[in-house]
Figure 1 (cartoon, one colour):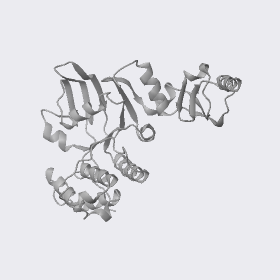
Figure 2 (tube, helix red, strand yellow; figure 1 turned 30 degrees about the vertical axis):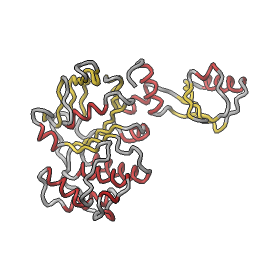
Figure 3 (tube, one colour; figure 1 turned 180 degrees about the vertical axis):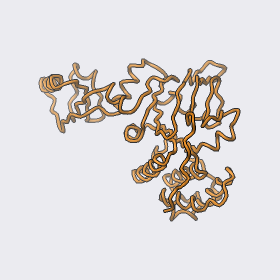
Figure 4 (tube, one colour; figure 1 turned 180 degrees about the horizontal axis):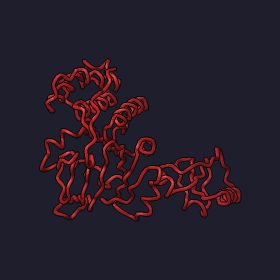
Amino acid sequence: MQANNNKPAPPAGPAISFQNVSKTYRGGQVRALDGVSFDIQPGEFFGLLGPNGAGKTSLISILAGLSRASGGRVSVLGHDVVDDYAAARKALGIVPQELVFDPFFSVRESLRIQSGYFGVKNNEAWIDELLESLGLADKANANMRQLSGGMKRRVLVAQALVHRPPVIVLDEPTAGVDVELRQTLWAFIAKLNKEGHTVLLTTHYLEEAEALCHRIAMLKSGRIVALDSTSNLLSGKASTMLRFKTDAALPPQLSGQARVTGRIAQIKAHDAAEVEGILATLRGAGCQVEDLEIGRADLEDVFLEIMQSAGEGRA
């Protein structure tokens, strides 16, 4: 594999800047974004999380130039996405949620055409590296129509990276794809991030965000409700979690504070005395417990706690 020697030089300002961004629809009756402000620094791996309808897609669409903000300013490497849109878009590589492809070309032809959109010539060596790194080398001459959904997703990633953008935006890149693609994708994106590329990730797979992101912003109802480093969010918001399996209904004293997924229940416990109290309540209610474990709260626990504390909003 050819080494990537074109490591982007770090800019003086933020890689991405959102300043008091608002977005309304239906003549102002629906507010999708309400004064969103934060910066992403060069070289960061940044996570943007939130429930459906929180405003993530609206924010990404404004960043990509697919939609205009109702107010505020967005810039990429200092280039305003409206006033200096050509430079801003050239600095971005965006992997969309939707599988959008041209059915008339092969994988390699699609990447060559995408290179041409950005005026990149003599790009075969980088195209070869993308094909190899994303597990597409044996599909290089296949027509896009012949590919599975997972393979099409890989091509979208390659298209976003074909012009070597210093800023990479991944909008739900692993939604509905297999484990192999996830591992391949994250290994390659992590490599690019180490080489200096800035990465903005939106995902509903919170274990990915926890493993990859340096900092995280959480949106709810168009507003930022949390913004901090991943480690600070994990250490500052939630604590120890008691996890176990049971076929029985939890007693009323515990059901309100438990998160239940199928047979698995998770309950927050601050210390050993609280753990013993929970177990005593379970025994007293006759609940048979299996696979009991005590562990640190994960990002999903923190996310749910923050969303609940932020109050009811658009889901």
